Length: 216
Image (cartoon, rainbow, N blue to C red; front, top):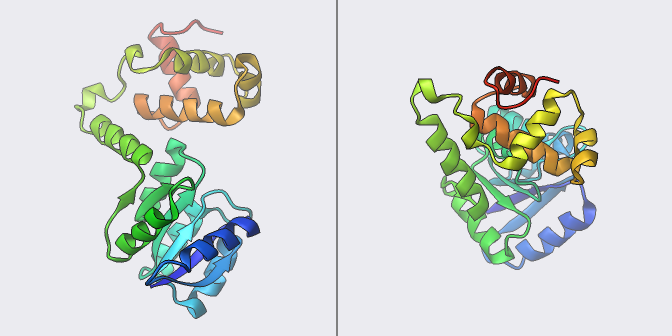
């Protein structure tokens, strides 16, 4: 089974190659530091599975997966990243990824996942499975429930939404709440997913109109 590793950090690529080459039935045929390099090398390497990170320079993993799905549909993509952000999860799966795992996945489990993806099976890490199940539950609700009440949001999510409504940037919100910008982004992604909006401004306006938060 031919595997292409697409990861911008050289040490991580080398580590993955070393671990995967110890697994029977897997051959790492090449590496790429970003999406552009992966697309350039794919015709010559002819991988069965591309192991793709989501955050990379020049062309990120989501865009790469879209391009591979269109240009080389025989290549199955498995996302392997440190980020469990809802946006990455659902954008990656919509782009055509057959699986989504975090980098804390044990090497033997990763090898099994690669083989499953090659067989056409879907593979999701435990944390990711929960997100997907919750999203399916939300989508299965009646149209009238597309924008649920404030009880669907946690106290922290409501706090972040209130600061979004006041026009604060992610950096400013992070500073105000003593959390990281990445955590702020996760909270905003969760708010948008739970309320059924694609835009943070729409979500903030909706919350204001329904009296959940004060007008700025």
